[in-house]
Length: 394
Image (tube, rainbow, N blue to C red; front, side, top):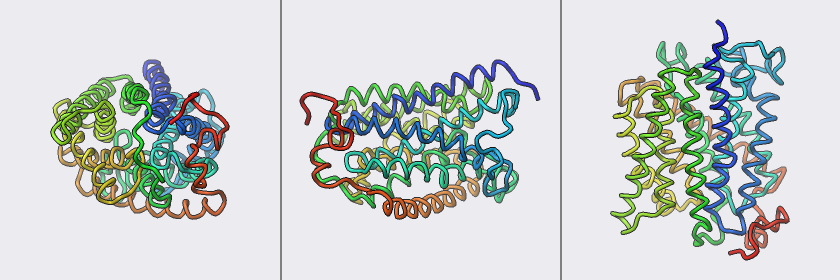
């Protein structure tokens, strides 16, 4: 197979778009949702994760995910990109470009978990946990589904394996479950009543995520063709539909639709279409997005008020529930088998839960999980990082 220039050019663009989702998209989205005294800590966490995951992906992550190991893991034959040159190919694109594109996924997945522990987590814990979690939880799951492992075609579910086009299971289920578990270990914030300090930041960040998601889903086709165009189109339709249904549901329940609510609906629609974006058309995307806006909003209420879990920025309700819902809808629309979709959700769910619990327990023995009461009250910006975002803070 030869390199195709158009495919290479598109994946270069898609790689930049997916990195743009984390820096600055996710950082602004999450940063706007916290109090002013903690906004820089969120920026720092997202930025540091991007740096640390890049190095860890180069060292071991890419090899574990896409190496030529066995059905369980890829081995270490490609660590540090050994024997990968500018002329090495992965399909119709340079392998080093495929590495970079997948690296941006390895960056944003642990960065999503940030939303569960903002305003009270230790910075050392963030770095060590995120690195180990990416290598020992995320990368193996990537191999199982995208790297030719036991959940892919020809694996334990037969010729037709798990369908997960851009990460409903690989990214959103894993990050969502991990976020919920870390939130349980942390316990609630001491003051949960403060509203987002900057809804404008939230909207700008969400808009950047929406744009970046075209690279996330469209790039997962790994080609500049009609499949990529369809993935981008259905991504947009689902996001638009979920934004409107979230706002409508807020209006019905509370009397007023909010900007923060509407853009959270956008993210719910994007997460929900992610696994299905390579397998459905615009009408199916409209259905998925319309349901996601209501379903994920109800999940927020259940986790906050029913289960009393302080998943601060609703990572599991939006990303976890959205990714799981979209994965199931692939079977509903007949693009995948029920056994493969539900089976993979269960296997990955159990693995993620166990691995996350083990890592939290081990990492907190090395570095504190939670900051002390005074630091939390004063805010992480000044206490942990020696800086503050504004002259007057709240």
